[in-house]
Image (cartoon, rainbow, N blue to C red):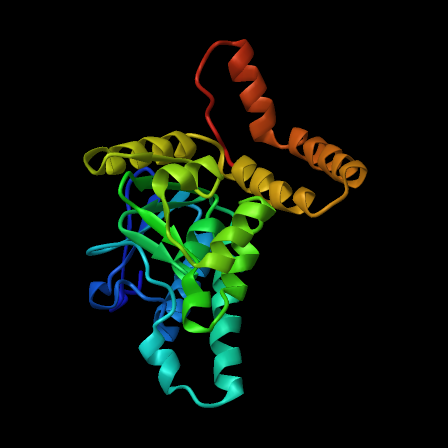
Length: 261
């Protein structure tokens, strides 16, 4: 697979892909180049049948500081700003619409678009000292695109508090409001995230893809429509070989052998 100057990508034998943002000098800021690289990587991993789950993390002192403000400062035209924010939105949608579950592994700070990246991932785990913020309001640039992901993971009052004040929140509070799943002491973070990734990787790729797509689609629907849609999806899922294998293996008290069909 192609190597990237600003990102480290690896895939282990269990099908766990690890994406490491590797620009610690900018606190792993989401520069235009980094965004384009991430979009390309996620698209490739989506087509790789060997990949079962993806972990994204940051190198150096923290996870991600958000957009590169030095890069933004030199942009002049409205079209340049629009292109940058459109591409960042495309990246987040790639994560949400990805066939593979994506886990954010956070240490240090996850600010602005970095916080958006955390909220866009399916699961998120941090160390106990991590902090999260949407601080755009402090520099006259409201975190409007991070707001989209944040407000779909955190309730309205808590989202607005983060967006209007720009103040950072702790890992403990981030867990309480649903921005992250859990937090651990730094020495245990890698072990705990690996444990979750290994557990997910033991499932059928096909079933995970079916379930992830259905999860996000039904959230946008009224309840009656969501049940109709979910019933249809579950019926289609039942026709897959992996559903038959899973039920048979449970009844026969043995481990399933997934065919991803």
